[in-house]
Image (cartoon, rainbow, N blue to C red; front, top):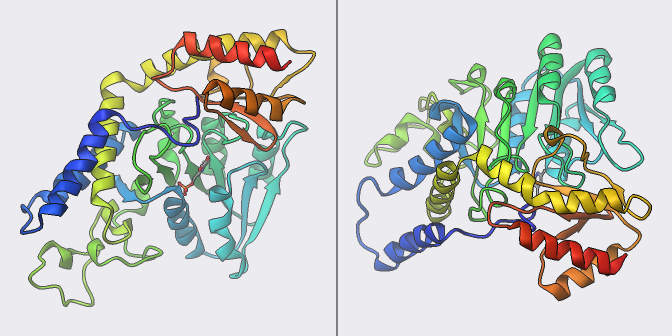
Amino acid sequence: MDAASWGPFPVRTRRAVEAVARRREQGGTLAPDFFTRALGGARSGAARLLGCPVEEVALAPNTTWGIQVAATLVGAGPPGRILYHHGEFPTCVLPWRVLVERGFTLEEVPSDRLGRPQPDLLLERIHSAPDLRAVTLSLVQFATGVVADVEAVVEACRTRGVFLALDAIQGMGILPLPPAALEADVIASGAQKWLLSPWGSGFLRLHPRHLPGGTPLPPVVSWFGFESALDFTTLLDYDPVPLPDGRLFEPATLGIQDFAGMGASVELLLEVGVERIRRHVLAVQEPLVQWIRERGDQVEPVTPLDRDEERAGIVAFRTPRTEAVAAAMAEAGITLSVREGLVRFSPHLYTTVDEMERAVKVLDGCH
Ligand SMILES: Cc1ncc(COP(=O)(O)O)c(C=O)c1O
C-alpha cells in the first residue's frame, strides 16, 4: 500500500527490461528500430495517458528533469516572482532556486495547521502578487494527498499570463488527468510510482506554445535533440536544426531498458483504464476512510475524505501512535510510509478490499 513511494513491476515490465538486457548481453549490431521501438512506445504511452499528441511529449529520467526544463523556459524571460505551496515535494521547488541567482524570488504560500495547501490563498496570490512569472504546483501532494484544483489555477494563471509547471507524479496512472491540466506550460512526471515503471523513467509534456523549441535551449543540450542526429554517419554539424517536437527536451542517451519497461507498464495501465483503476482504489480505501472517521477522537484526517474528487490514491492521517503503526505494519508485512509525521496509505490496482480490512485491524490494534 505504498505506490506513492514506488510501484512494483508487472510481469510484462520485468520481461521487457530483461529482453533489452539480454540483447545487450549478446552484443553485435542492433536492428535499426531497436531504439525507436523502446523509446517510441514509451513516448506514445505517455501521450495517451496525458491525452495529447506524441510530439508534445519528451522522455525524461525523473520528474525533476521536467521541472528543470520549466525553470529554464521561465529563466529566459525577465526576473520576477515564482509561487509555490508549502508542503510541496522538493522536486517542485528546488529546481527553481537556480533562478534566484538571476534575480527571481521564490514566494511560499503557507499551509494550514495540518500541513495542507490553502488553495484560496494561492489563487489570491496568483491574482495579486506583483511581477508574478510562474506557479509550480503538484497535481497531488506527496504527504497530504490533496488534489489541486487545476482548473482554477489554470484559469488564474491564464488571466495573468503566468507560467504553470505541474508536477503530476502522484496523479499519473491513478487519476485521469483533468483536461484543464493540458493548459499548463509543463507537466512533469517520473514513472516509478503509480506507473509501475523502472526508476529512471518518466516524461514531460510541453504545451504547444513552447514548440517548436530552440529558444531557449533546454538545460542540457543533447546531441539527440537535433536533426543532425537522425543520420549517425554524419554528426559533425555544430549548428544543427533543433527537432520541432518534445525530443529536443530529452537529455541525450536514455536508459533504453527503463523505457522499454515503462512502455510495457503504461500499456497495461491503459488496458485496464485509469478511471477503472481509480474506482477500484476508492473502494479499497473505503474501510480505511471509515476507520479514520470512526476514530475521530484519536486520529485526524489530513487527506480530505468527504468527496471522492478531493483525493487520488493517497490517504494520510495524523495519529500520536505513528511509530507504533509503522512497527505493527512492518510486523504484519504491510508496506506503507510515514511522511512529514503522517501515516500515508497508497493502495493501487493490485490491492484488495480484504487486504485493506486486514490493515485496518492492525491500525485498530495500535489505538
Ligand atoms: C510530488 C513528488 N514529486 C516528485 C517526486 C520525485 O521526483 P523525481 O522523480 O525527480 O525523483 C516525488 C517522490 O519521490 C513526489 O512525491
